[in-house]
Length: 97
Ligand SMILES: [Zn+2]
Image 1 (cartoon, rainbow, N blue to C red):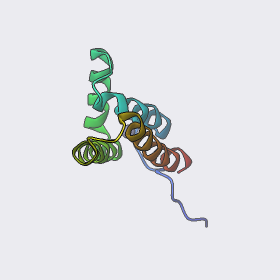
Image 2 (image 1 turned 135 degrees about the horizontal axis):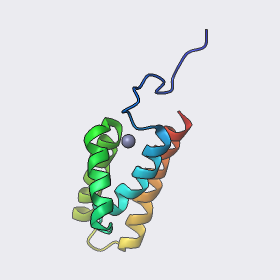
Image 3 (image 1 turned 60 degrees about the vertical axis):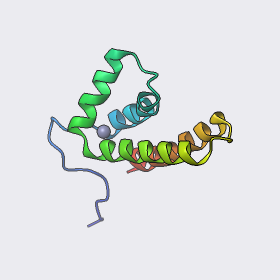
Image 4 (image 1 turned 90 degrees about the vertical axis):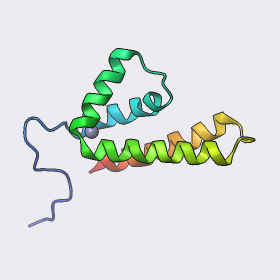
């Protein structure tokens, strides 16, 4: 009787955790408008059907806008690295679940 912590119960329509990891990577670029239009559609469709990813997307967008507002003198690369790091932590949690 071990506790189940992973997202074990999802239907066939539900995206898998490894899908989400892929999308989470793309979300960074999606927010930066660095994705091709076809990829944007795929990300949008996924966000539509995947609440956890939508939450991460919202989080990333919020982080980005806060950062953008508060650090006009900080190098964008540094900010980006920090956001990526943050996203990777979330990703590890998802793929490790
Ligand atoms: Zn997802």
